[in-house]
Image (tube, rainbow, N blue to C red; front, side, top):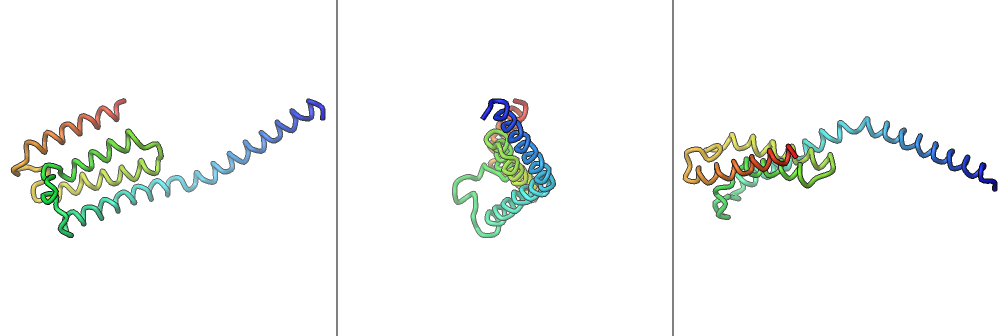
Length: 140
């Protein structure tokens, strides 16, 4: 087989692979937004289930000696985790939903953000440290 024929076949093969990859990308592009929204909703559902277990089923932070850790601490940690460790857009968006739910769930607490509680100072310090880490991870 002459070299010219071989290079032509390689070009044709490359061209076919290129067209197939673009057709696949165009096809998947139509599913991208629903996948991202579904991942965000998955994060919200996991957050709601965790919050329900935390509040209604008797799983208490006081039993585990974690009274200084509030919902919003776990939400901030989820936002830090999603930015630093996750490369997948789906996982990234799931942790965004989880973090958002935990931060919003904090507003429904008896003492939101540990205000007027016995552990307000230590909880606030943890929140400040987590906020600093969050800003650093999003800037870098």
